[in-house]
Image (tube, rainbow, N blue to C red; front, side, top):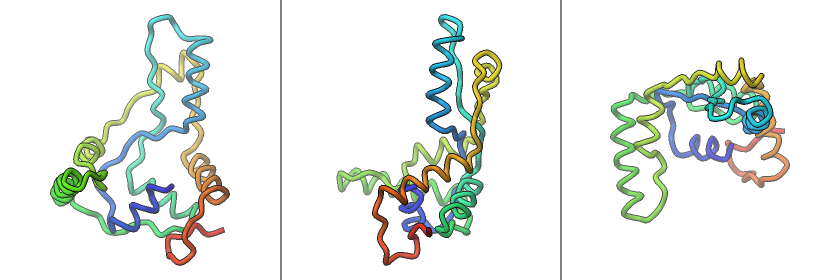
Length: 155
């Protein structure tokens, strides 16, 4: 959520790409299931479902009331911005706002398959909306969000 608020403030558009999203609680349960039911030496992917960044931001907007970016930013422009961001970060000893490596990975749109974990371990994944609702609720209860910004979480 903190990254979403920061992203909305710093970057006015949606990047082309996405990632598999999974609730940490589901990963923890999958690990327990792997110990109890997994085959020794086997590996299991617990990646959840793939979501585009646009899907993610629309869902967060619905839940939090924080306006999602609307502008779509072309990949080539994003790569240029990320290159500048990485180099500026190196010069200032700060973190890159838009890491080039992350942009490239999200643009690949890798959709991982958790079928083996689902079949052999009985892994289930809660809906993204449930996970994000819980995250927003946690931030509302524990994090002070500036009251003088349009990106405030609505109650």
